[in-house]
Image: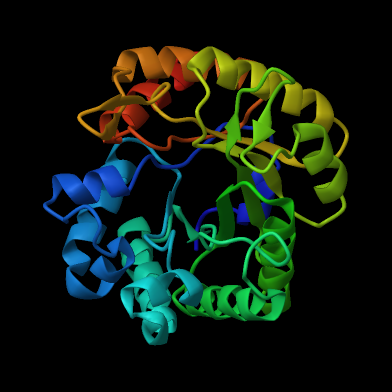
Length: 300
């Protein structure tokens, strides 16, 4: 490949753009809400590749594979656990085709949807095996790195990192979902940025940050400032993938009203606050990402 090693690229401190929401785009392509989005890799790979290409056309340096829920624990809810390896391998191959040789593919690992014992019913060995299998599929499909995202429980994140590192030595990017609280920023499980950075700073990851959650854009900027201070001198890059603003419940659906221009303006502030890896989460589209890329490149 002609581009530099992903680990070096991420840690260079130069802005690095990743994509926006996949689920929103799949629904726009006619995929039904409640269906298994990960299975679309096998059923309609051309749809997934088309979405990846739109994000690359918007200016992304990397896209995430369509595998957010493609671990065996989550796939079991759709009776697809036995297809986990194939789904992940195929998803990586689709993204690799769209990326070509000049851009990057991040294998996407999301939360299981349950909690580890004793809080939940998941046994660590079962979840670890599921994350190992998912990683093996992604690596065999040709990813350049792994992103573990939308986590709220620290023990699940640490277990996922352990699973990935048992399979490969590719760079790992990690992201938690935060909510506002009277005491400050917290994940749904009550974990603070301070605890997360303290527990993960020696784990060998390349980047750490946030995505999703229920913060306003001003909240995301403040969270970036907090994380930038905590990550200083750790050698870990700061990752930011905010939603397109705070979600509003309209007719039972989460709706995001931020325009691409408003989104780009806010992400410029996030970049100035210290984030160098920038993308989008729920409610964002290729138009949001294109506006973000244009605005930040215009600073240089």
